[in-house]
Amino acid sequence: MAFAAARQLHNKIFDLLDYLRSPSLLLVRLYVASIFFKSGLTKIRDWESTLLLFEYEYEVPFFSPEFAAWSGTFGELVLPVLLVLGLFSRISAIGLFIVNYVAVISLVDISPAAHTDHILWGTLMLAVVVFGGGKLAADYKLKIS
Image (cartoon, rainbow, N blue to C red; front, side, top):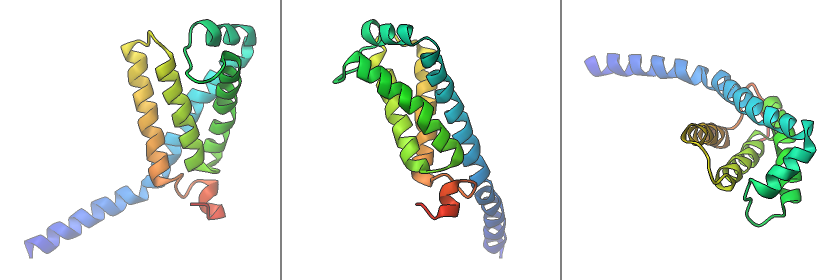
């Protein structure tokens, strides 16, 4: 009898949490998108400085500084828009995860606070990869997994 009551209480609590999954995923998508979109806007505001940073400050492996600047900026401007819309949410989150990872490994002197921020953003993007965009995403309406 006590077990049945505990199970019922447990199920009610976690049914409520399941109800909050989609709004939570929307907040995650909006937060991560705002961080990366603002970063992309900063890069296009002063493109010459961006190119200089990619050439002399960031150590992006495998790519030329110019290609890294173009592709990183493109990712920071396009993928957040898709993430906000919830369109191809998982692919967008994977793309931003990669941009985030490359930023971390490219910055030789990253501060502990910045490193912690990047870990948070990466973790939030992994949540979108695992759970999708939720019911408040275009993916849900379009039946995109």
